Image (tube, one colour):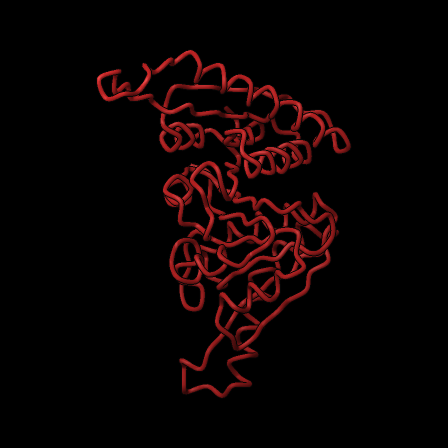
Length: 286
């Protein structure tokens, strides 16, 4: 499948969180002209048999529940995309565990979307086994969608350390801001680790590096209004505060300096604990 026609893949399980993820995924697919694949993993039933006092497992009932959840998800997706544009929807139900199924589907996806509860139960940030594994090992960017309704105003915020590895986060953020007609707020943190420079010099250097990192993307997306935020602050706190009124927060899957561990380390977990908006963990599709 060509990158231009790569689908948005969303995990669905009928939970409230998954419904929010389906809505977000459908809108994103419509904005990009991408097909939407809604995937339901019914798991691999373990039949313990009647000897332990349990009724025999009826695999067909699991498949039926999956089909019903997918039918509801299709209706929700169609409605969510209606005001943006038409989308092609494919539904998939498999007797498989969620992690390997969604990870396999991510190999051909433009972005993988999961809710913060239900699939993987991200109740306290990126702590659920399913979503943690997908955030670490998916082959494409991963969007983590909270139960709260998505804001339709506010900026797109991107956290960057200005290293080459952060280019994917910047690229995703500019693309999302352009398609939403939103302001882009680019955030970087600095510290007094390098004692041979004054605070003023450190701040100026961070500002210059951020400007350089954004320059090619400003040229590519001249319609996007950009605001830079550079501060001496803990990276997680700076991102959380800046994204308080954001419609979307984008972070990279790797980092250095102030943004080491942005995805699954202490900084990333702190962001996902507190962020009330959707979060995209950006990486190159592979």
